[in-house]
Image 1 (cartoon, helix red, strand yellow):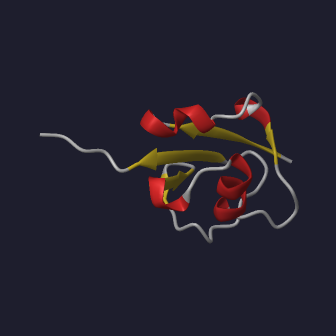
Image 2 (cartoon, rainbow, N blue to C red; image 1 turned 90 degrees about the horizontal axis):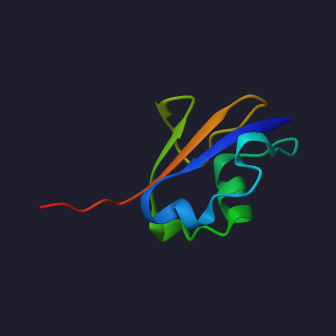
Length: 75
């Protein structure tokens, strides 16, 4: 099974080379994938799975699209 991963803004440095076809293990959740990518949880603010705001505990399935966003400041 494979998913698509997009890491935005300051998290873009964690984007894997195989982001368009990232391999997924049986039972993987968003949190497990984030940990494998080496993203510190304190840097992660928003998670979207298939365009829907999702918690870290969300199970992933083949074909899913995972979007990871940091906290963004502005003024």
